[in-house]
Amino acid sequence: MVLRRSRTDFWGSGPEWREAAGFTFHALDANAPEEEVQRHSHDEAHFVLVLSGGYMSSAVGAPLVSNTPVLIYNPPGTTHEDRFHGGRGRFVAISGGEGREAAAFCIRDPYAFRLAQTIAHELDEAPALTL
Image (cartoon, rainbow, N blue to C red; front, side, top):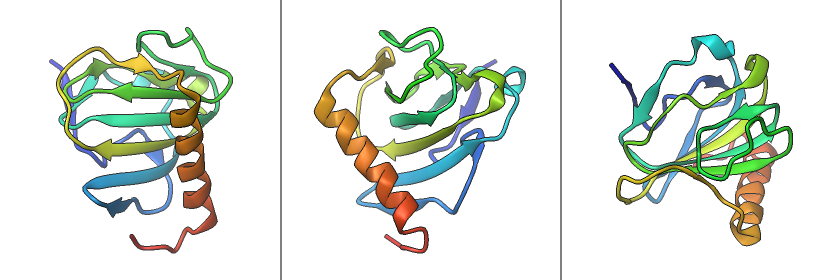
């Protein structure tokens, strides 16, 4: 059986998530040993920007273990077991939006990657900001 996760339910800890224009934004530290991360899916689409740590993803085009920043897109309903090697890392998750079920993939577009990094920076710079 596949575990269903909500738009704000990630294996990570950090400040309270923020919401704007139908999207939620989280800046999180991985908090689960890799063997505890279960096969799961999310009802809504989400992006994961890996800021540090060895991220293991089944997304098309993703490295086996990424030790550099990487941006992953998971369409709604994507079943995966993506996790951090050793259970340690930092990431930003952005959930929401419309989409159709498809395979997850690693985003190589420099503009999208830079935009995700800018969002991550803004989340770190304004922790008390309420959107």
